[in-house]
Image 1 (cartoon, rainbow, N blue to C red):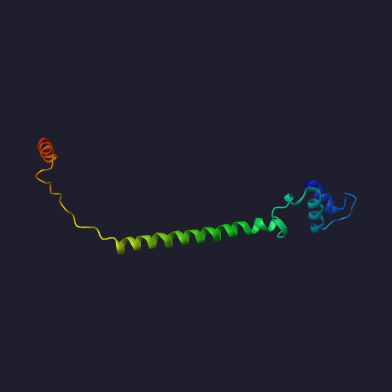
Image 2 (image 1 turned 180 degrees about the vertical axis):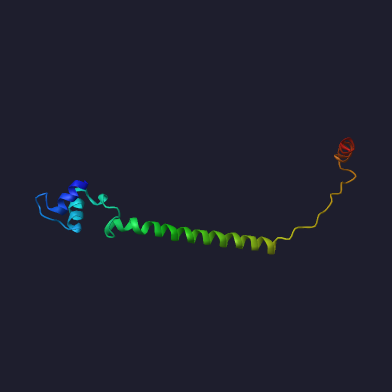
Length: 109
């Protein structure tokens, strides 16, 4: 490929000396736009340039929305939900499990 380009520039390829733009146009005509390092900024190739930008902006909006949602839910939790004071359970004298509970606690201690 280097030899071909040197021949095109020097004019030894039979077409005379070519400019850089003419050489690039010839390779694009022969190989297609994939021969270029960067795609052109027109048509469908514009998506290759703008796609990452749109993805970044969409990700930024999603992150902001998530942070706002989490902040609102934490604030709502702190404002409205009072935890009831700790209450001790009182077993009724007639509760059938009372004696069983007492025996298990005595065995455990």
